[in-house]
Amino acid sequence: MGYAKKSVGFHLEISPVRLTATLASRHSEVASRTPGKRESPPNDWVPNLTRANNPPPLLACDNAPFVLGLPKVAKDPNRQSAENSKAEAKNAAFVQLLRDYAEASEDPDASRIIEWYEAAMPGLSEILKNLPTVLRKRLDQDLISVGVRGRPPLHRKSAAHAYWANRVLGGNGAVGTCLVCGETRRLVDTLPQSIVGRLVPAATTSNVALLSGNFPAAQRGASGKGLKSAPICAECGLTVVDAFNRLAASESHRWGRYDDDRATIWWLRGGDHSDEEVAAQVAQPEPQWVSQFLNAVEQPARGTTARDIRADRFYALTFSGNVARLVIRGWVDLPLIDMRDNAVRWFQDVAIEDGTGNPYSAIGTLAACLGTMVRREGRWSEPAPDGAREQLLRIALAAAPVPRNFLPLAVARAKAEAARLGSDDGLTAAIARRRMHARIGLIKLILNRTTYQEVPLTTQLDPDRKDKPYLSGRLFAVRAALQRRAVPGVNAAITDRYFERAVSNPASMEKTLATLANQHLAALRRNESGRGTAMVIERLITQLESDMQDAPGRQSPEDEAAWICGYFQQRQHDFLKAKEFYDAKKAGQPAPAGDPSSTSDTDTVMEGIDE
Image (cartoon, rainbow, N blue to C red; front, top):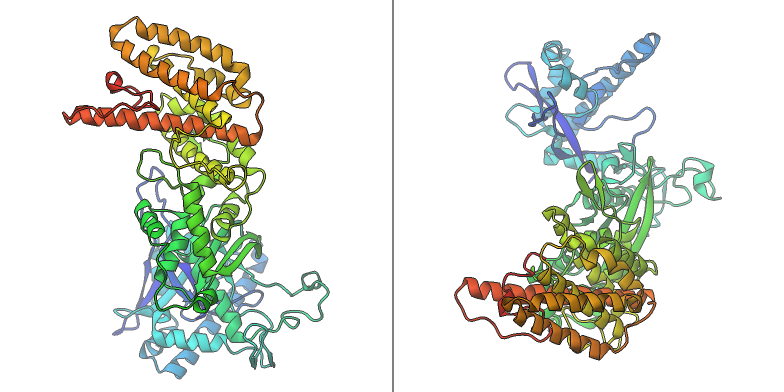
């Protein structure tokens, strides 16, 4: 308690035998074309405290003015003497804190460190003289821990943890009722410690305030400054920030990268490890785990009453920063059993088979597929729309309504990126396919929760589905496959030329596409090896045209989405069937039975595998 995870750049070690010291850098050299470039030092849990003007010292791990008495270099030479005095005072306060700790804990390591300070820090000037320039610059910015050689750093010791927690819980002496725990305890004017700035997206300071009440505008009309209008005891104030820092630094309880525009932390009250796995898997699903989870859903929990289950809760907090302040972007609070039910529905609705063995997309991929695919400095970038990740998490775990703009965004991006699915550049094609897979899963979820609730879309091709938009999308995919077989390596594929217009108004493109299909069938029939393929594809085209009757006219966003689903699922179905033929031939096994819903046949074993 009272600790936060921060980078520690150096460790000052005092010899247990002689009054000498060494300063070890925790920076490591990295292979780089830029000489002297270093990676960030490792993180450690260190004492933490809210500090503003005239900051107090931190126990056994602080910056250079406190630990070594090194002053900052003033821009104005006339101010340097003032900086020297400040550094001297800070170092004296740091040593006094060590004395207080040594007296309270009787820690011999602390006593040995104090001896070195009282002897005027022998050897320090030589250490600084021999320090490389790049490390000397880092010394002014990094935290420095202290300890005795051969022993753990002082701040890591259990006695130091206990002493620091007791010190920061001291409060200001006022007693009142805490609004958090409801107990009558010693209260604080400000929270004892701050949130670590690097854990908060868009924050620009090393420390971020969870609550701010030190000026009238922050009080919103409440009386008094500080926390007088919202009394919090020292223990609760310390616990809440400590918990936030630990969750925000956790790989398992944080969603979102540090360079995202916002992040989400989550936690449970009650529940067990399996419940924690549910929340983690929603963000980054593993197909085997999800399959086991869905199979076990119908099995009732043993030894747990309904009331017990309802008492367990799931919480999620979405946040960002604004300079040195925390901004709350979203909040989820619901029974754990509801979270599990919502996760089941989410996995079922978002699943789309694509031949990779993983029908589920990560939340980050789903959010990114709604944004643009931009090439910057030779690399593809996939920025997600503002707040998309947070909204998807709320849909997945809290069954929140899908924002209205998600479907038009998904349709627009599908139109714009369809041509990239068959790109000659392997990386571009792979990224486009991954994005399309995620996008179709999201479209399926939206349609199944709105337009197609009675007859929902399935995870793979549904040959019995008779919706005109869906059939029209399938027909376009079949005609595109026909062109690839009839004119290998064609420069202007129908997907490149007509996809967007065919999605918006299939009827307007029907005559053109039908004419091209007839030409491609004729081209296949000219060669004996292509006649079987022509017969298979012509039969499928005839069946789809018969089921569809007239091509649909100008389509609504929902119809466009269904069209795209039909196109994608037909395309993936053909891919899987072609792969079955290919695998059978490679293994020397009989070819699988023909599929009337696929363009693949025994004469086109290799075709479509790379599409």
